[in-house]
Length: 131
Image 1 (cartoon, rainbow, N blue to C red):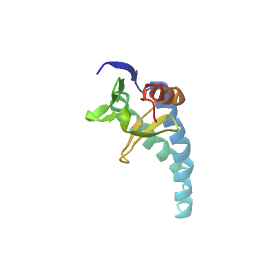
Image 2 (image 1 turned 90 degrees about the vertical axis):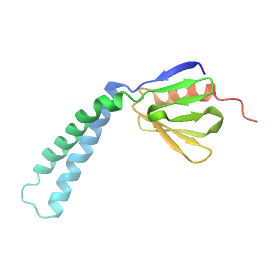
Image 3 (image 1 turned 180 degrees about the horizontal axis):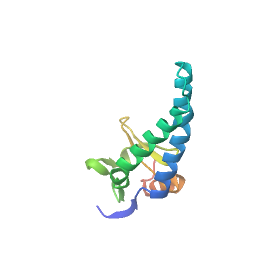
Image 4 (image 1 turned 60 degrees about the vertical axis):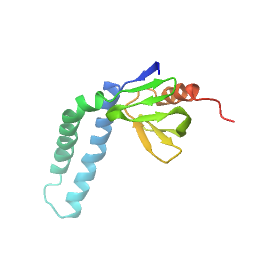
């Protein structure tokens, strides 16, 4: 099995995804605090930002190390994941990720892609012709 393409996570996209997550978490936490009658609702914004920033910092090395390799026969991913090209039922874009769905229903994510549509196109081009 010869590797033809490597799909590595993009650091800028990882950071951008966490900024988006923080922008959703901050008002969400404030709403929860408001609904519970907390007098200092603004602390939700601080807590939401801190939680997302800490999570992002803590997991960055691990997430950016999750590389997928496209070979002539399939996709090799982190934690010994493998998806044969003939076993791919569907590919779809979810934000900055590409979801791989097998004929058996297993789902895998190639996360933090700078251009998920290009990743899908490259995998589609490698798939054997369907009858």
